[in-house]
Length: 231
Ligand SMILES: *Cc1c(COP(=O)(O)O)cnc(C)c1O
Image (cartoon, rainbow, N blue to C red):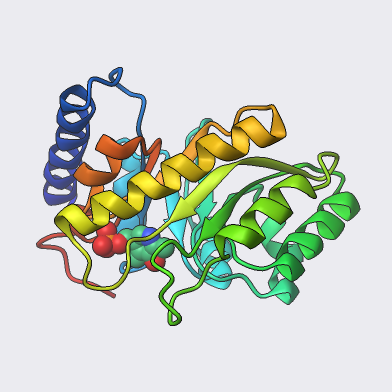
C-alpha cells in the first residue's frame, strides 16, 4: 500500500510543480495539503511517511483522534478544512492547526476567545462562498470585508482566504471563481495595508486552475488515495 501512496503522492507533487511552472510561478510556491478524511490512521501515517507534512481533516474529532496515533516529523502541521463547532475548539486548538474554514463571525470570535485562554495566536483563513451557492458554507464577500478589518491580531493571525468552486463546477467556471477570490484577496490587502499571503483553493479535480489563479495551498484527497481502500 505504501508504494501506491508514494506513487500517487509523487505524481500529484509533479503535477503541482508543472502547474506552477505553466503559470510562471516559482517552484514550491504551492503547498500540498494532503486531505486524509477518506482513510484510517494507518493509511494516514503512510502518507506522512512518504513525505507529506501537511494534513487536512474536515472533522475536528477525527483530527485529534488521529493526532493521538500518528508519528509526525518536526515540521508537521495540521490543517482544519471543514466546519468547526465552537464546542470543539478547546481540543482542536491544542494541535495548533491552521484553520482554513472560518465560516462565521461566531466561530471567529470563539477562536479569538479560546486562543486567549490557551495563550496562543491561531492562524486562520476566512472561507469565501464565492459561488454564492446557498448550499455551500462560507462567508459572503461583504462579510469577509467586514471581518478582515475586525480580527483581534493578539489572538488570530489572518493569513488569507479559502474557497471551493461551486458544486459540479470545473474548467473555465472554476478558473473564473478562483480568479475572483484572488482579486478579493488583492483588494483586501490594499484596504488593510498588509499582506494576506495565503490562498487555499483547488482540490483533486481543479488544482491546476487554482494554481494558475494564484493558489498557495491546494487541498488534495482523492488523487492521493487512488487504488487505496477507503475506511
Ligand atoms: C474533501 C475535501 C477536499 C479534498 O477533495 P478531493 O476532491 O478529494 O481532492 C478539499 N477541501 C475540502 C474542504 C474538503 O472537504
